[in-house]
Amino acid sequence: MLLDLARSKKILFFGGKGGVGKTTVSAATAIARANEGARVLLVSTDPAHNLGHLFDRPIGAQAVRITAGLDALELDPKSTVEAHMREVSSALYQLMPANQHGEIDKHMSLSRDAPGMQEAALLERIAEVVETGVEEYDLVIFDTAPSGHTARLMVLPQMMSAWTEGLIQRREKADRFADIVRGLGSDSSMEDKTIGGADQEEKQRESKIRQILLRRRNKFVHLRDKIADPDLTSFVIVLAAERLPVLETIELHELLQQTGISVDCLVVNKRAPANAGEFLDERRAQEEIHLQTLADALPGVTRQDLHLLAHDIVGLTAVEELSTRL
Image (tube, rainbow, N blue to C red):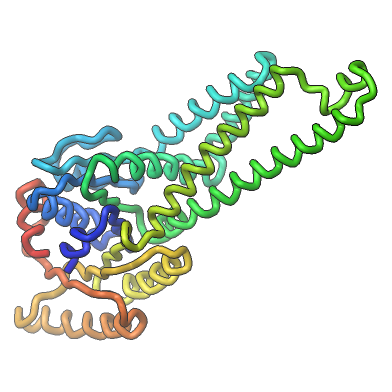
């Protein structure tokens, strides 16, 4: 059923509590689709990247080929923030007089560690990956950070587009006020002393600011529209059949529903196999209690169970073997 979902969507997000196997399940899904002939991009947004450890090879910020039909990359928050800061600084240098560049550097230095900066920069990078990925690949899969971080990230497109829209409206209001003041000027000397007395260079600067804000708003609006489109995107929650992961799954599902993101599959990973001895039978009975809580809370969401394996999953061959169990 997870594979059926992957066949019907262009974008899949895998999320859930830390340590439940999101990376392994998302990678197995990616390989399963690639082995069917699809072009797949697997993207890690978790600051504690595990794709490289899983495939036992280096994976960085640029897409690398894992196997036929499957590319992977890891979005590094630190380098993403640095690239974002350079881009913003470059734009501000073009917009502001040279004697203000020192103030720009001071402001950017303070902003680098501001709350939410990593998330905002990461969101812009995700928007870029989505924009190009849906054109170049049949499926883009995101292996996300643990639940709390992911929930905030999913809310950000709407928040950032609304915030940027507010900036644009304030710029337009200032422009209208400037036009009014300019109209009140009785001579050129008076006009030069008013807010409306902007020369051509300043007007061009204002136009560039609006263009930057519009591009930023459109980027977030497009991302929000794509991840909220149930025909295009779905969210898969991976969990263990334990009390805390089950409760966290119910909370994450509620947050995603409020954001307008479709959750179409729950993957219960590392389930104790049936009839495997007294200890595992007791463990499985305990799991059933927690899974009943899950079923009562989320009765309409499809569930798939993956059983506990005897060995760690490391390397391409091991992930491919898991992919056959989906």
